[in-house]
Length: 79
Image (cartoon, rainbow, N blue to C red; front, top):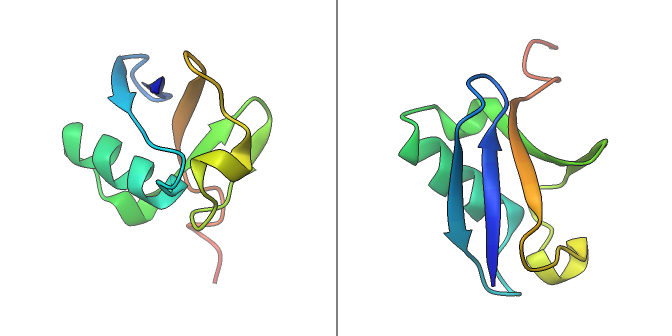
């Protein structure tokens, strides 16, 4: 199915073909690489919920055409 990933910093979007067994981590890596960003510094948010990297597309209940946001990891600065 196709989902859109929006770069929260710039507002630009990409369409991505995903399978139900793809993980959110794979989505982050693909989108971050597309925008030349460090995948380790970003997470994906759907609505107000940050999605866990190990969660599969099926487990997130994402639907065809949904838009997720690539955002800087809010825990990135914590030690």
